[in-house]
Amino acid sequence: MCKVLNVTTANGNKGIELYFEGKPSADILNRLKAAFFRWHSGKKCWYHRDDETARRIAAELGGEATEQTEQTDTQKAQNLKAKAQARRIAPLWERCDLSTIPEHPKRLADKEIAAQVRAHLKERFPEVKFSLRCSGYNSINGEIIASPYSRERIMKDRRTGEPDMYGYWQNSPALEAVLAYFDAYLQSYNYDNSDYMTDYFDVGFYGRFVVASKYEQTTATAEQLEDIAAFEAADKADKERKAAEAEAELIRQEAERKAAVEQADREREIFNKRSAEIYEHITIEDLLEAEQIAFTCLESASGKQSTLREVVDDITKHAGKDKILTDAIISRKIVFNNAGDYGFFCDNLLEDWDFLKGYGGYASEDVRFKDYNEYMKLTAEQRKTVHTFLCKCIAVYNGGELQFVIDPEGFSYARYVLMTTTSTTEQNAADYRDEWKAKSKQLSPFYFPTPISEQLAKANLQEGEQVTILMLNGWTCSVDTARGKLIAATPCKYAQYKDAAKIEYIPNGKRNERYFYIANEKAVIYRGNLPEIPDSLKYTTISHNGAAIMQAVNFAGEGAADFIKTAIAYYAELGYTPVLDTVQR
Image (cartoon, rainbow, N blue to C red; front, side):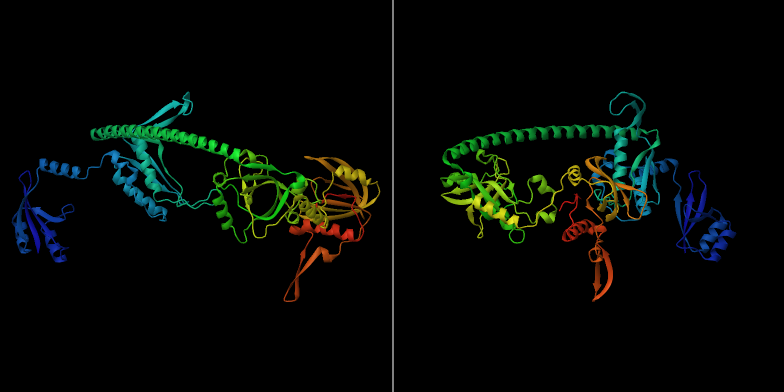
């Protein structure tokens, strides 16, 4: 069965068209071809002029004839216009709205991303010619090649506005909006989990949309010109709206700022009045050195809490292994005589109080070092053996009872607040200092090298003397040992070091002299040929299941700095004292 149409063209010619539901059989196709029927690829039918042969074949195939008149040119034009209006694109202002871009999958293949982006942009911006390429190296780059939107070459320096022979390209608002949409839509498929602080990069792809260097502005149609004019009007209105909103926001912020300043001034006035009353009511007692008190095992907050409640909360939070306990020597007492003044002070610990200024700090009675500079030269392990305490602290009393201790660290606010614990004791500060001074005398002393030039002058090394040299080599991270006949040990300047020495000697068993410089290196020089350091100190045997499996080298690598100290201690047991020693320990 087939459908038969009797067609009459606009010129009056008549014909017959045969429409089959599926592909006809080979026998029917042969009969159609024998009768000179032709295939119409556009209409998907077999057609022939209206004659006896065509009508006979149509009747034999059992089709029902239907009359149809071909459309006139006017009808065709009207239909085309209706179809064009049906698929008419939206205004440019709407098409460039970035808020309409949806979220997209972030881990698609580059080619799949390019295909989807290309299809969307072609449909949304049919008037724009562009290219989108995948390089194969995790990059997708696009160029806008041509469009009816203008671009102007400005022959000026972009920053100064001075005439410039190279100039720069300035996109029209319409082209800039189109470019922004193109790039934003492309990036909607991208992601960036990189951490640039650690040089870790994890992105979907690299690339963006740009305007081609050989961009071509095509001739705009009347409709496109109207669309561009509407876009520019909307863009101008949008910019004016945003400018008005920004100005209104600035006015609002300025009003808030003024209100905040006025409020702060009122609060400051209230505070000054209230604090003046406190200064009149409190008792400030500066303690003489013999009267100063030492409190032990005080618990310290982490610092800069604005109220006493925050101090208690902070101490509670760090209870346990993070608990911070310290000792403090009191040089001043602040006694509050009524609960109101005390409560106001406790709620304003970070305000400036004249009675706190210049107090606080750290101290130690350890006799093994003489000043702060020497203390800073100690290693972390050495500092653990040093007892420090807070000094020149302020004790706060209310109603005759101690409430807390303040270490302002020289500032005029309560930088650190310390509370008493069940382990807190009170004693005379002088007795406390003497006690810790005596304890430090029982500990192994620290050695701080004196200037190299002074050590050499005191050693008075002579040419021809036999010497033994140990030096920690910073390049190889190992302790080098040398024995030989000294030629000269001369104080000098070396590189950026003003205090250095040049050591010249002839190694035992050699004829040619050698030399090296001692500046910032750790080195010791002994008179005479000292015995070898035993292997038990040079190496450590590592065992597994009772069996020795390897030997670790102590004089190289991480243990080199400790080995040179071990060597000095070994020679000290044998009665040898270095004449030059720059190893701090």
